[in-house]
Every structure is written in C-alpha cells, then in structure tokens.
Amino acid sequence: MLTHVWGLMAHPQREWKQMHDEHETVFHLYAHHVLILSAVPVVCSFIGTTQFGWGLGAERTIQLSMLDAFYAGIVFYLVILAAVLFMGNVIHWMAQRFVDPPNRRRCVKFAGYVATPMLLSGIVALYPIVWLCLLAGVIGLCWSGYLLYVGIPNFLDISDEQGFIVSSATLAIGVLVLEMLLAATVLLWGYGEQIILSILQ
Image (tube, rainbow, N blue to C red; front, side, top):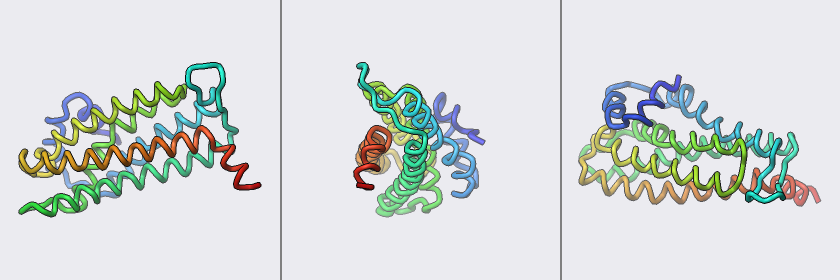
C-alpha cells in the first residue's frame, strides 16, 4: 500500500520510470493508493471542522456538528474520487492526437499518482485556517504540476515536445478542477450546517 508515495515526493523521475513497467490495474490503484490518500483531506477536515472550526486566523470560527461534518465528508470523498477518474479521462482524450497514445487505464493511473501531493496537502485541514489551507493547496498543486511534466514522457511514453502540450492543457484543466474542489470544500466544510438548515426550511 502507498508504495510509490515517497518516491514521487523525493525522486519522481526515477519513480515514474520504475512504475512504467508495472502492470497495475485501475482497481488496484484505487484500492492501494487513491482510496487511502483521498481519505487524508476528508478525515483531517472532519477533525478540524468539528474540533476547531473554519477560521481566517481571527477569533470567529465556523464549527460543524459531528453529523454535518460526516455528511460533508462523504460527499467530499466521492467528489475527490470522481475528480481523479475525470482527470484520467481528460489526459486520455488529449493524448489521442498522437501516433501511439496511452490507453485509458494508464492515463487514469497517471492521474491518480499525479494527485498525490494535492491529497497530502489536505493534512493542514486538521487546523483549518483558510489562508493556510490555500497555501498548502497551492504548494500541492505546484508539485503535482511538476509530477505531470516529469511523468508524461517517463510514464505515458509521450515525447517531451508533445508532452508539453498535453501537460500544459492538463494542468490548466486541473487548476479548474482544484478550484471547484476548493469551492466545494468551503461550502461543505465551512457552511454545511447553514446549507442543510436552509434546505430543510
């Protein structure tokens, strides 16, 4: 489980080359990597929002009840899992323009591993100050972008010239997906109780 996390964070180029020849299925990827890492921001957000509450660094915080945080966590978890699958399909779609494109399975695997730094950045949600979470998200995005650029030639067998186009477009779409996830985070974890109450009324 999580055998490639350290390698992707410490020496990504070597790790991508090692992973290239592994015949891993999408099911194995989710069972041993994505499902576990996706729980990091969810569990940390659950603890942070129920014990400390969202804040901007000032005294006022928005704290969720255990039940509201539980429901928000389920939705947030499913959204993350879907986002990884979506980005894998985006990469597969964009790679079809090349002579020997990678198959969908490899693209989904690639997306799952590229998301690693962003998922790990969710640890800061244990003490959910908005600016700190945004900073951690930006750092995670930058490292994921680096993994993307390094991994496309080493894992997807796309040349550097062609890979630059795919990785740039993928990164742009990934930023949009991340912004949607951040918006969902604020809505679910910051204002979940107000939203639930307004729906019930």
